[in-house]
Length: 97
Image (cartoon, rainbow, N blue to C red; front, side, top):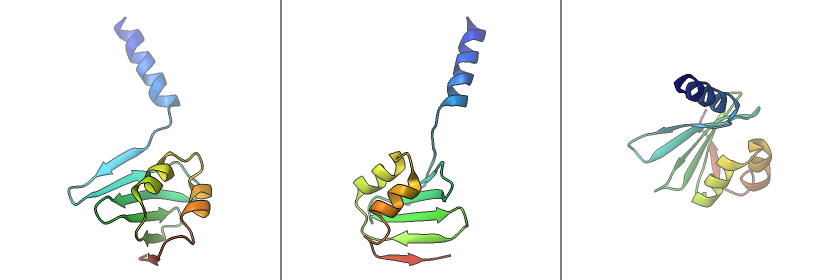
């Protein structure tokens, strides 16, 4: 039974899609995402700042982004499509790298 449980957990991990969440003590949450265009997103809940690192390593910061937009972005099946439809052009931003 123990081997079956281990094998089942292994299969679940192999075939599930999940994000690795990195939380920091300064109010930021970073998530590596499964996307061909976006490598990682981060959000500061108290300041409503969205941090996006693209796969080309360019980094942008978007200001006054509501928490629900960040949560929907994390759950979106296509991060690039969600970004283009709901974030790009809607919020003040600054390229930082």
